[in-house]
Structure formats: C-alpha cells, structure tokens
Image 1 (tube, rainbow, N blue to C red):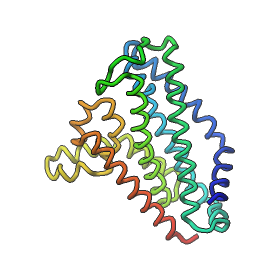
Image 2 (cartoon, rainbow, N blue to C red):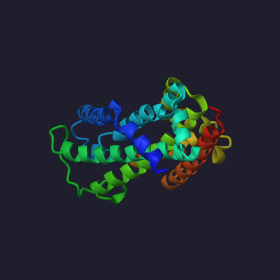
Image 3 (cartoon, rainbow, N blue to C red):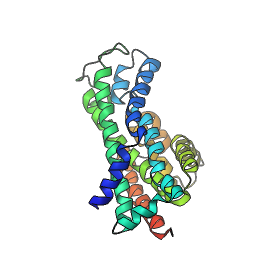
Image 4 (cartoon, one colour):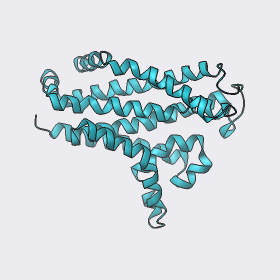
Length: 254
C-alpha cells in the first residue's frame, strides 16, 4: 500500500494542474466576491466565496483523469503489476484525491480570511450570529465540513464512472451534468407527486447537501429531506459507489 500511495503521490504532485488549480480557485473566489454584491459579506463568508461550486469543478477535472488517462495509455498495467492487489491501486488513488479535496477546502478557508479584509465586500464580525443561530466563523467551518462530504460523494461517483466508461471527456461531461443538472432532474422527479417518500432518497438529491445547508428554506422545498437526512444519504451513497467502482475496476481485464 505504501508503494501505491507513493506512486500516486509522485504522479499527482508532478501534474501542473495540481498546482494551478488553487490559483484558479482564488481567482474564481475573487470574481464571486465582486459579482455577488458588496452587502453580502455574511453569505460570502459562510460559503467561502462560493468555493463549493469551484472546488467540485476542480475535483471533477482532476479526478476524472486519474483512471481514464491510465486506461488509455495502459499505464494502469504497471501499477497493478507492482502492487499486491487491485484494491491497493484503487484505494491509493482515492486517498490522494481525498487529500487534495481536504487541501482545497483548507485553502478556501484561508483565502476567505484574507479576502474578508480586502475591499470586495462589507466587513462583518466573525462573531455575528447568522444561520442556525451560530456565529459566522462556525457557519463557515460547518459549511466547509458539509461540502467536504458532498464533494467526497462526487469524487466517488467520478471514480465509478471512470472505471465504467474509460473515456476522460465522457466522464467529465457526465460528472458536470450530474452536479449542475442533478438537482433539477431530482426536483422534477419529486414534483410528480408519486412515490416522493422513496424518490427523495435518490442519489441526485444528495447533491443538494451543501446548498441546502447554507440556504435551508429554499432547498428544503426541493429536496424534501432534512440536513441530517441528506448527510446520511450522502454517506450511504459514498459507500455504495465506492464498492461498485472497485468491483468494476477489479473485474476489468487489462
């Protein structure tokens, strides 16, 4: 397992996108600060300048290439040959991308602290009571934690799609569609008024997790689930998608 982790880490840190993405994240957060409005300081702080949307974009692009590119150039054969089992190869990739997910969320919080003292938006005290009768700093940290769970769900799904399809462009496109249209598709299903009690637990509905946390009143009408239920659903689908992804990867003939 140590060898597999080292191999994945070595490849990951030598990719240009790994180092460019944090700068892109900062740029997108600054653009968000300018575009949303001067008096939205509390919302921007809680959401780390809308970083959840930007982080998931980065993770989809980075994550979708971790398998598909190696499938296409047959580099995966070398990894499997030098590892004791396929689970080590699969798990090593997952650990690396999850670690990168943690780093991006940590950077988003750091960037937010810095941007709050810029002239982008009105300055609001960290102790200001905002959502859920909590101080703003707590809102920000909990939103980041919730989004870490939501993006882990997306990562797991991207890995599943990568093992199933093996085409980087298709996997990336499908992942974008799931993230940005999944909510609308899920809402359409739930608006049918039939089998809502069952359909509300569909995996597309779990993509509402972060948005519902910082805008509960609006998104609860869409998801029909409590925050705690979305968390449980996301955790369950992470386990399911991880197992399915690995089973597909293990059954492949290289």
